[in-house]
Image 1 (tube, rainbow, N blue to C red):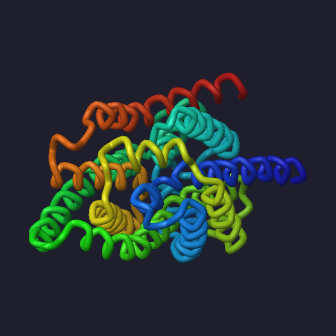
Image 2: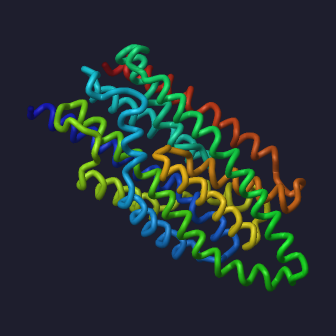
Image 3: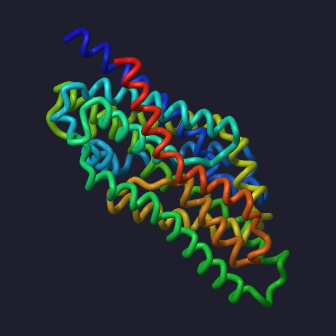
Length: 329
């Protein structure tokens, strides 16, 4: 029993480390547009994002249950704790690598890919719930397309409505409104992304026989929400620079459209208990908004490199987790 507690302690530490890294890795999702348009100073933007991430994380658990039981059944794994450990190590490694190079990759893809790879190698392909895994991947792949489309439509409508207004007056007004959309974006990030660490900790608790259900304990919710908020407070400036300035020159009206579009996609996914990538949602929304503004304004070469990262994250983390399981255990 004492050994189990120690091992669970390691799992909780790794899960909260993943959540912390997820926080500073994905800070850009919530504040890149508002910082780049100077709607908020970097310090105020980070504080706002940290607080709203915490609030969002405390209010929902549906995504956590999906993470905890859709890829595999923790009650049917004899080595569930080991699977969780290598899953978290692989996801953390990939998050740090992409953060270092300023690439807005997906923490969600990293975690799902690593979990599937760890289960496949550690327990066999028959222990992977392929239906649940495919459903999650479909959501992860469809959400960016939807966010792109919504961003394009929203920006097109705004262009039509404000076509005869002075750009200076329009941007001045939207610079204020952006504060609220940045808060909304951070809130929805918390409702979805923080759930992933909660789900993986609950998965480990069930696998270890500490509890027999996927309901998220209160201490897990508070711990994950706090880790996410603390990570957000650190900031991920390399990714903020990529998303806020390198895709296309964002003005306040564009930032408003992108934040609103992404937040609507993320929150809808949360209500459907589907884990999606907040990184994908906001990046795709920015691309959609930029395309509506002027197709040639978007730096499609950079966008292409980002999209390639999206597609390679799941297979790379799956292989990495499988190798780590084979080496460690």
